[in-house]
Length: 265
Image 1 (cartoon, rainbow, N blue to C red):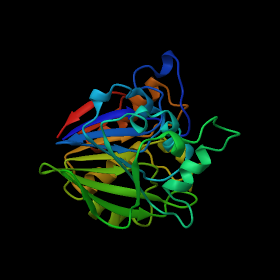
Image 2 (tube, one colour; image 1 turned 120 degrees about the vertical axis):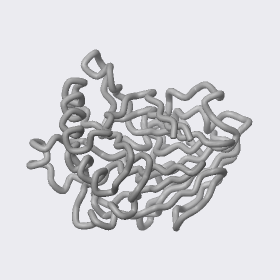
Image 3 (tube, rainbow, N blue to C red; image 1 turned 30 degrees about the horizontal axis):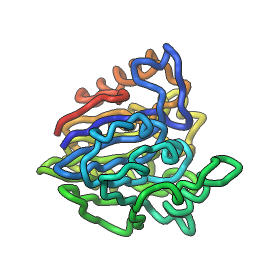
């Protein structure tokens, strides 16, 4: 199972020399196993995958939630308009808002000069209602209310005898013990670290964690490796470097996610 980070920012994309090490695109992760490419979220990072050789025959998009930084790249994702793939989209249904509604919002003619669903090739759109399998992947969802307004879906993903967890846009809170158990013993945990501890004092309830709470969650869950993820757009390379150092004091096997970084599990 190969994990590749396409975009690692939260909120909105940034650019410039102060962000060159970790990158400025918003959230998207590509995971390949067997004949299947599993893509977590479709922030602007997904637009860098124009080459069809990046994908396996079976392409599955899986959404954690539908805030703009997690879907902004979707209209410009070439894989939606390229032949030669089997495509599915899975996402939670937050009340009356689902993947279909997200596509409709993005296709507002006042915002985009074309309707995504009119141009994209055949793609099955399915709700996340419980655990499911695609190719080698087994996907286990866990809903958390700890992100405004509708909450967020956390995922445990297993393939080839390995496991990884996705906890983006998650604020460690009252469900901490349940989430720790959900991620227990995994090979890799990818965890939100949007804020520093100092910033968090004025941002409680915003739905994000710090590098320290991410490291504590990794330790409590007894995972093998932690990757910090979803960095604040104000955090320059030097700021993320410092977050990585501080997290390692709590959980030594910590890395800060960088665009195009690959991890083999």
